[in-house]
Amino acid sequence: MSSFNGEKPTIGILTAGGLAPCLSASVGYLFEKYSKEFPEGVSVICYKNGYKGLLTGDSVKVPQEALTKGANLLKHGGSPIGNSRVKLTNVKDCIKRKLVKPDEIPLEVAARQLQKDGVTVLHTIGGDDTNTQAAMLSKFLAENNYNLCVVGLPKTVDNDVFPVKQSLGAFSAAEQGALFFHNIVNETSASPRMLIIHECMGRDCGYLTAYTAKCYHDEYKRSSATTMLDQIGFVKGRKDIHALYIPEVAIDINKEAARLRRVMDTYDCVNIFISEGANVEQIVAEMEAAGENVPRDAFGHVKLDAVNPGAWFSKQFADKLGAEKVLVQKSGYFSRSAAANETDLKLIERCCETAVKSGLAGVSGCVGEDEERGDELRVIEFPRIKGARAFDVKLPWFTNLMTEIISTYH
Image 1: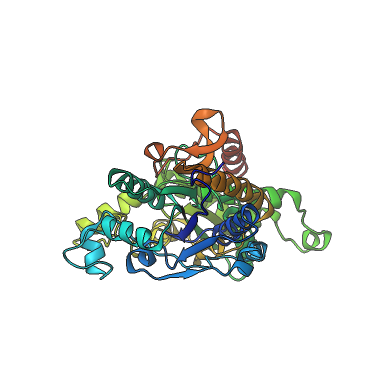
Image 2 (image 1 turned 135 degrees about the horizontal axis):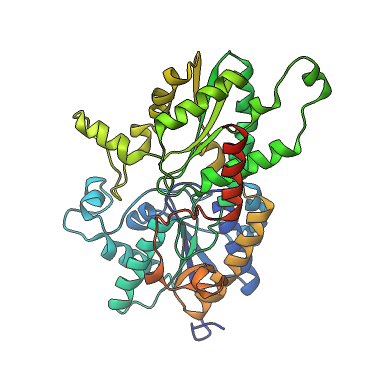
């Protein structure tokens, strides 16, 4: 199975980009799988803080004892080796952040470090940016005759990596977002005419917001108002979702305001789920028209905390709905930093097993269920990996959810 002519490989691992509820489990499963492949021991190097550690040579060699206990990481959130957002092909940014010297090329620096460390298989765990950078690194290494296999794992709560059917950690993040709102929704009892805006992560893709809403709404339907609450006049609909806005669906603010005003008058509250990327183009256009600077990260993405979509939506609706109090709550950091749930753990383990086999066979790519190959779990060729895939709003579960929301709260 190995492409290393009987020699033991040296394994490199890094996690990059934002957090997701799969990073610790992915590292743990890779430890576990490699320790089983090489019970007599294998060299594993973890680069700290993603590509930053690779560029600066900041790494740790994992003790053999730790490799055999990888399962202990499955219950943890975050990344045990740290993340960062570094674009290897953004030379100016890497120089500015002093990750490379002014006369150096980041891809070359990364390649030299891997060569120095003797890495033969590099596992990159991250989203579309991480894996497209892995693709560039893999291409550079091949063109410069350095025999190294790069195998990525698709991590993103947005579930927007094409053609991967399901990204690692997205199920868990949605479940945690629903748990977050399960408590926040009780704030509707803190003040009359309360407007609650629940902002979920999702720059270009509405998957996380939509699936979080589905998880919450399904639980809401399963629960029933207690007899006591019914007797004292509590209306169950106050805890439901009254509106759901994602980047893929156009929003008629005035029409929605009129509908939601009726909801406010009936239920004494309005609960809205939004993606952080909903209506961002319009918000950015308004900011730039007003002469405001819109900051962007190393990948050219608008920094959404500076744009603050939740605050923008609250301004659009507060007066129109006659809200006495507005509460904007963001579940992103809560949900993305959680540990993986059972559904994700099963997928993560399958992907890691395939990743290890692929690495030892010398086949580079990103592991995932390939939508263009009948959802087969395989190593997807790096050139086919693309980010910012739009959420499919025609999925039956989503159309049913939207139909229920609009028909119930019309």
